[in-house]
Image (cartoon, rainbow, N blue to C red; front, side):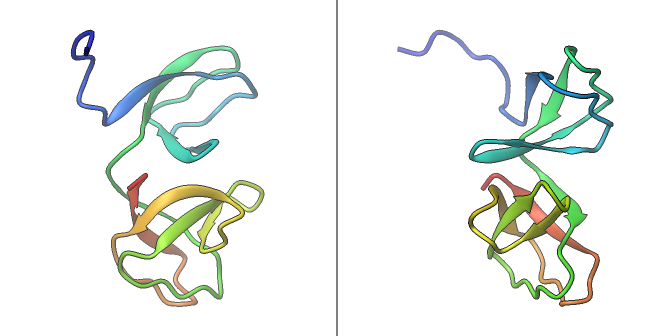
Length: 108
């Protein structure tokens, strides 16, 4: 049985276990990603988005079509189609090989 409504699920509280996180940073979380709404200091907490339509940097040389599964490459801080990276969501718009960003529906 459900214990009670918490929120819409568009964001969650996050306790930062590592170095300072800047507002707008993508945070890999095992099998999903989040985006910091504000700066989150090391050891501090803050609200992070886990849904929504976002424009994020993408890998150069990768063409993306509507609905393709995208993954976050934490080392290079870009989205790509390499499934050994953290699942991030589905492409909300196409992007050419030379486009710097792609629209993504986070964690869908």
